[in-house]
Image 1 (tube, rainbow, N blue to C red):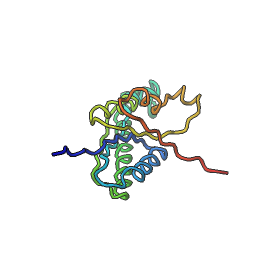
Image 2: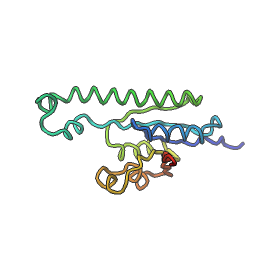
Image 3: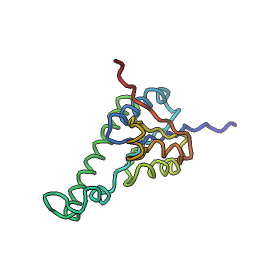
Image 4: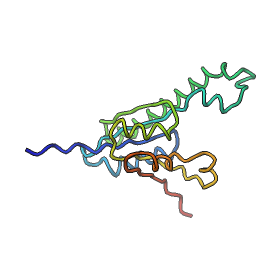
Length: 165
């Protein structure tokens, strides 16, 4: 008696960008047309509120200290995460993909996505590309580049096509 072949696990890193949503649509259109072949895990890495407040400096909103701004930043980050997951659910539902795991994890996506690969024993990690040039990548860091080097599975970077002139 042959063992059943299990579905390939694909972890999809997503943020609140058109590049991420394009990558999710691309994956849904190309991988998930045959039911049961792939299992999809959508992961959104939510920045830490203290990290976000730290980026704004010691003085936050309306002259308030960073500690005073923390609840506002935390609430805003949760709203963004809710919007990201809602949009992902909408796209998956439109593609008739209902068996999806959605997860929001607080932290840097460069760490969260490789950890999700390990947690779900993923066969592939898919991320979108923002299309930054070398200077922006050097300053901001590239999540896709980091994941390509640190995730213990194949990594697919989906680029949104540039409009032709």
